[in-house]
Length: 297
Image 1: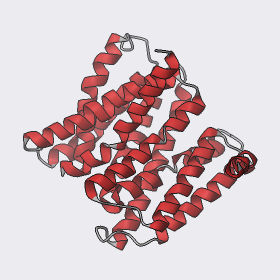
Image 2: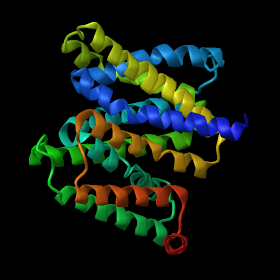
Image 3: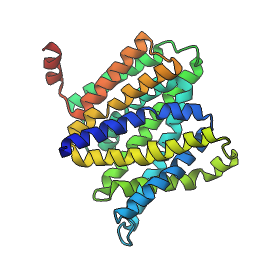
């Protein structure tokens, strides 16, 4: 098996795992802060031995400045998880995941503000297309399962989650050369420390089923997913990694439909297509001229 083929398999597997996390979060029935806490706690059980085996825990491996940057990124990632998981119950997994995929635009905006990165006309065009998709989703009629107020709140929470993910990615850009598995370990450790007062105050989860769900979220959707994702990133070119990342929202929408019967209404579906198309164009660096030629072919 070639390195490229293995990387593609790892990336697809990572995105399929990510696409199912919404189901586990919803059926756990636990408060969001507690779900994120146990995600971090069980995630450590996977990431810690991996980092130790790779020699990442040796003294002097990570400088103080790098550790602080990784910890700040951890705060952003934990905030991202809290907001996204809460958005699932407010606006359905499908809508929350679709809106969450506006994160490339958040990253471009932060890069322009803090890193001096240039905003091109193509990027502004994709941003306008995503904004149009967002308007369609906001103005469409939500399912009866979600009240109008909670539907809009869910959209806002998903946008907030996208912002914090982009902030974590921005901080990660300053950690070039730092092993990604070690960054992930620091992030989940930050989550344990930050959320332990809230999580433990809500009482311990009861029942084997609940514990198995929380363990799966931590060990599979965090530990294993990170290992697969970073393995794929090391083996694949950036454009292929970006293209395969869109397996995640497709799987999430399918899971929401099959598990909960939440189907996108026509306007929601149209808005989702526009957002994902714009995100793909932004991530893969498409130009409008090339996209128009493809559509005409």
